[in-house]
Every structure is written in C-alpha cells, then in structure tokens.
Image (cartoon, rainbow, N blue to C red; front, side):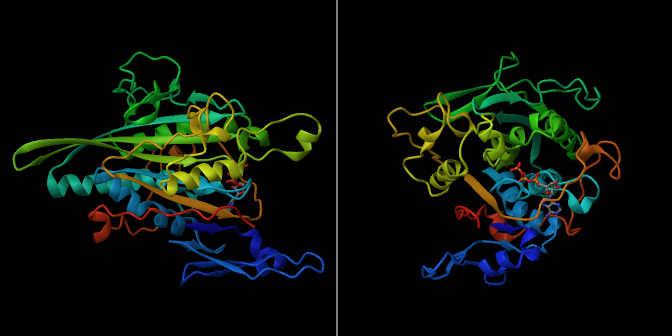
Length: 389
Ligand SMILES: Nc1ncnc2c1ncn2[C@@H]1O[C@H](COP(=O)(O)OP(=O)(O)OP(=O)(O)O)[C@@H](O)[C@H]1O
C-alpha cells in the first residue's frame, strides 16, 4: 500500500508528476521534463491500497492492520512496516503522535485491535492467549543492536510484575543475531515482557519508543535516519479442538525502518554515514516480498546485513524457508510529503487523554473488521513499488 504525503498538494510540480486514482488503486508517474529530450510515457502502478494526501491517519491505520491482525490471531506471523525516503512521515505513520487519538499510528492501533480480536476469539471459541512484547533497535553504520526493553527502570512494578523470561531462557546477555539452520536468522536474547492487556502492551511500546536512540537525540537527523525500530508482539495460543489441547505461537512485527539516507551537508564535512542505502534496503525488501531465492544481504556492511542478518560471503543466501506458508507481510510505502514538526515526548501512548497507560482507541470507532477472507487466514502479500518521486 502507498500513502502519499501532504506536500504534494502544495507543490503543483509534484502533482503534475503524480496522479492518483484512489478508486482503481492506480498510481501514475510521469517523468519530469528535462531539456529537449522526449519524455518517456507515464507509468502506472497498481497497489492493494492507495491513500491520498488527504487520507486521515485513522484510515491508513485501519487499512494497514485489520487483516494482518486477523492472520496473527489465526496463527500466522504478520508484519507491518513503513519504507521510504527521509522525512516522509514513516515514523508518523507507524508510531504517530499522542496529541489526539486521531493521530495515533499503526503500532498503537495494532495493539488495541489485537487485544480486541483476541478477546472476541476467547469469547467465541474459548481460546486462551498470552502475549509478550520485545523491542530492538538497529542503528548506525555498524548496525548495532539495542534491546529497548532491557532497562525497565521506569516501568511501574505492578504492570511488569510478571515479566516473562527472555527468549534465551532468562539469562540476559546482549541481544544477538544468530543463523539458525531451521528458522533462518533469529534475534536472540532480547527481553520479552508479558503484557496481559492492551494498556500494558501500549506501555511497553512507550518504553521502547522513548529508549530509541533517535528519541534520545531528536535533533540528530542522522541518528533518526539510520535507525530501524522493531517492535514485536509474541502470541501464544491454546485452544481445545475435539477435546485435544492445541498450542501454537505467532508474532506480529511492527517495524519503523529508517530511510538510511545520509545528510549531504554532514557528508561534505566528512561526517556521518549511513547503515544501508535506501535502494539496497529496497532490493532486500523486494526480494523477500517476491519470495526470491536470492536475497541480496551482501550489500550490507560486514558482518551483518539489514536487520543484522549475517552476510553471506557466497552471495547465495536464501530467505528462511517458511514450511507452513504462514508468514504474512503488509508494507506501507510513502511518497514525499511536506515536513511538519511536532512535539515528541517519552511515554506518549500512555499519556492522557487516554489516562495513565491507557489503551490507544480504535481510531475509526468501528472496531476490528472481521472479514471472512481474513478469518480464513488469507492475507494478501503486498508487493512494494520501489522508490518515490
Ligand atoms: N500526515 C502527516 N500529518 C502531520 N504531520 C506529519 C505527517 N507526516 C509526517 N508528519 C510530520 O513530519 C515530520 C517528519 O515525519 P517523520 O519523522 O515521521 O518522517 P520519517 O519518514 O520517519 O523521517 P526519517 O526518515 O528521518 O526517520 C514529523 O514531525 C511528523 O510529525
């Protein structure tokens, strides 16, 4: 899906180059006139969803999360991420602002809807769920991994009274990325904390966002651009089928990818550096989305690729196999928009007006959609159109 940014409405030039047919979900790009050369014919791209610059945050969020949430509750892994150039509003789309419920982003909306759908499932089929949250940041040229929930000093103890152990079995080392012969590349040792309700999960999102390097130094453009934020909700599910107890697990990944663009002025002065170029990241994303046999991890700086994936020196690495076919990805791409500045503060999803550690509300007021296709677990894999204008 594509969200077009609001700058385009202000710039007639941009609007001439980009035409949207929201009903047909078609985006047409024309080439900018460059000297006497003949212009190439406009090219059209079809998407599963297209949001114009006038679309509200609530519309984008409900479009992004509904089916993925259903898939995750049905036992599949799901992922929503934003991808695009710097300052287009990726973080705004994924995380949002806390000034009103209407400006909450995909992640707090997904948390709210996930717990509502689980409750619905619990009432309907008696299924039991438990949820743990983890959060990791990958930052800088060296792609350093930071466990954003490792230090929960600020967390009220009654909320975190029952912290689950880490995935490594309770012994905390630094978060690392390991190659697993069966499951592919796996993050290990990240803190996983139990969230028994949406308020607790929203609180953990707050903690993670506040601990992010880019939040700690909001004026450092480069820190912001070279930061990938990975927030994951791990679901364990138990239900009785014909009197036999069935257990299963699934994950909902909510990613705010950095643009990885270098601040040109800083580079001229000899400073700065990007972790991975946007187009290299785009190639990795495209390869994964298309199920390509070869994923170009090798573009990444040693020793790890995007998301810390170990480099494949032979260049023949394959994406981790998904024998169940149960992984679902929904992507959000953004076209350029006007830059607006807004306040950024810690713990914003647990702040009023929703009350202390309040649940972000369903921004549409319509509640989760229980579409029949989603209930069957059929979620489309949206293919990303690479680049912007
Ligand atoms: N649709 C929107 N409505 C209002 N404000 C917006 C919108 N999109 C972005 N903004 C504002 O524009 C600024 C830049 O957005 P944001 O930080 O989300 O961009 P980004 O793509 O994540 O940038 P970077 O690549 O540097 O991380 C922020 O202040 C954000 O609040």
